[in-house]
Length: 254
Image (cartoon, rainbow, N blue to C red; front, side):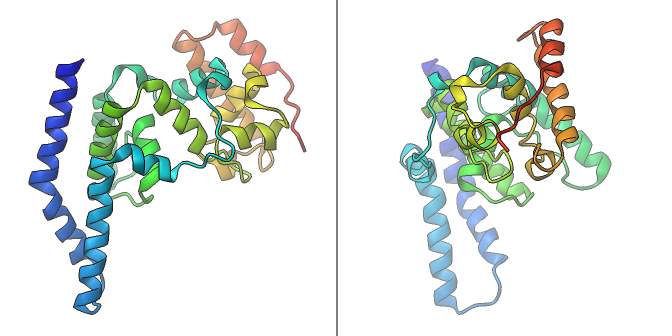
């Protein structure tokens, strides 16, 4: 474990020393024509923010997390944890922040489409994006996401990463994080969510504004079925349990 961490840390330090300056020069070069003093200030600020995130990641994370309705992992049902892993990142416990298979699949899709439609992001990478990065699909942003994800895997356990992810993702209808989602959709605490409710929530983040059961209940149920099938395929639940959860009536708070 210590050797693995040293290897990953070496990669991060190499990225900082070899590529960071060039990356910030590239970003600065894309800025509109503005007075040189303002450009220098913007350049310095963005460079400092990225450097700060790399060398003091835990402090940077704590500054971004909203603790007002933060739910720790022991109060998040196992079914919720498993359902989100099954549908978002089924190799979550086997990778170090990035999924080579997912990256290769995304590269193939992007080459076939001639664009940047597929990202191959893991839960760790999605957490990094939610906390720090924009939604733009550029290779520069993906590179920063990649190295920050490795850094996060060095500094946090998988359970901590999953906990933070479930507290930061958007579930639609104004619900940010599992605490808000359980309250807004079911008027209950996360710890009391059923398998049917967990699997429905896990299907929302891919397109929360469209899949929200308050917007399109049928779309939400279709996504729930996909989640339950993924859970059964990966051995978290049996096929009969999945079917029973799919058929369980959903009682929304509104």
